[in-house]
Image 1 (spheres, rainbow over the protein chains, first blue to last red):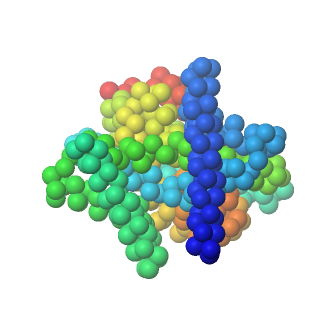
Image 2 (image 1 turned 90 degrees about the horizontal axis):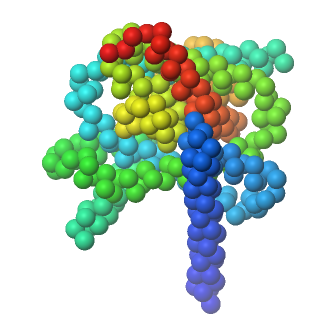
Image 3 (image 1 turned 30 degrees about the vertical axis):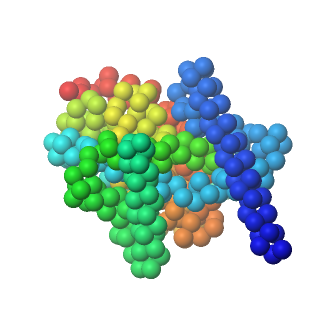
Amino acid sequence: MRGRTRAAVDWAKGFVLARGTLVLLAFFYAGNAVSALLRLPVPGSVVGMVMLAAALHFHLLPPHWVRGAADLLIGHMQLLYIPPGVGVMAYFGLLRREWLPIVAAGVVGMLAVLVVVGILQQWMERRG
Amino acid sequence: MADALAAALAIAVTVAAYLAARRLYARFRHPLLNPLLVAITALIVLLYAAGIDYSAYDRGGRLISYWLGPAVVALGVPLWAQMEEIARRGRAMLVSIVAGSVVGIVSGTVTAIVLGAPRQVVLSVAPRSVTTPIAMGVAQKLGGLPPLTAVLVISSGVLGAVAGPAVLRLARIRSRTAWGLAMGSAAHGIGTARAVEQGEVEGATSGLAIGLMGLATAILAPPIVAVLLRIFTVR
C-alpha cells in the first residue's frame, strides 16, 4: 500500500515537471517566433522570458504549473554551460594567436561592469 | 545507432563530471574549485587523452546546451516573483543595469579593437557580459563567432565568481542589493550561483540582473557596435 502511494506521488511529481517543461518549451518557441516575425534585436529566449513573466503577472498562467520545472532548470544552469565551455578546445588555435585582446577584453569588461553597477546602485540607494 | 550511443555517452560523461565537480566544491568551498571550471577542464583533458574532437563530443553536448534557451525563459519566474521589489528599487536598478550594459559593451569592444583583434573577434567580444544563450544569439546577429562568445562569457563568469567578492569588498559595496546586482550583471548565471551562497537577497537580485542585463545588452549591443566600428578601424 505504502509503495503504491509513493509511486503515485512520484507520478504526480513527474507529471508536474513534464507539464512545466512543456510550458517553458512553448514560451521558448513562441518567443523565437515573435523575435523572428518582428525582426527584434533580442533573442527569442529573452522574449519568452518576458512573455512568461507577463503571463504570470496577468494571471494567464498559474505559477504552480511552471515553478518546479523552472527551479530545476535554473538550479542546474551550470550543467548547461559545460558543453559550450568545452567548446574552447575547438578555438585553441584562434586563442593562441589572439589571446591578448580576447583575455584583456574579458577581464576589463568584467571588472568594469562589476564596479560600475555595484557603485552606481549603492550610491542611488543611499540617495533614496 | 553508433551515433546515438556516442551522444548518450557524451551526455553521461558530462553529467558525471558536473556531479563530481559539485561534490568537490561542496567539500572544499575554494573559489578556484568552481564546479564549472573543474568540469570543463576535466572534460577537455579527457577528450584530448581519448583523441576525441569537439564536434564528435558536441553531438551529445548540444542536447544539453539546448536547454539553456528554456532556462532563460525559466528566469521569467523569479522576474515575476520579484516584480514588486523591482518596482520599488526599479528606477535605480534600471539606471545601473543600462549603465553597466553600455560600459560592458564599450570597454570590452574597445579593449579588443585597441589591442588589434580581427573583426570576428571584436564582434564576438561585444556581448560577453550576458548569459550564454543570449550572448550567443547576439553574437550571431552581429556576425561574430557564437562559440567564441560562449567561451568568453563562461570565462568572464568564472572570473567574476572567483574574484568578484574581493573586488566588491575593495569597492566598499555594503548594500546587499547592489552586491547581487553587480555579480549578476558582470558574471551572469555563474556569478549568481556564487551570489546564492552569499545570501537570499544577493541571489534574487543577481538572478534578476541576468535577465535585465541580457535584455539591455541585446537591445544596445547592435547600435553601439555599429557606432564603434565607424569610429575605429578594425582589420
